[in-house]
Image 1 (cartoon, helix red, strand yellow):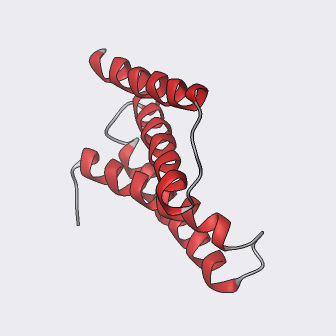
Image 2 (image 1 turned 60 degrees about the vertical axis):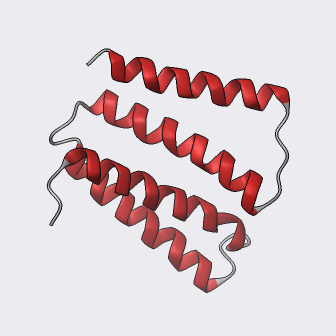
Length: 107
């Protein structure tokens, strides 16, 4: 069992990104296979996240989980689903990334 909260956080982020990536493939939760993957990945993410907040501050954990997850999902959308990004979206991603960095610097 992994006990490092940072490793668990990365695994939680990965699970959430996988679950979110399969949302589109689930076609509104009408396709059983992708739907099961969505719920399983989200359950894993929440389970891991619940372990992380026992060791790391809640605000820091959530900022990293949501910020890194958001940037990762935008990249999945771009490369897996060929969704184009406008200037506003790129600026938003940069701001999210800057926010995650700033939250980490405060430690």
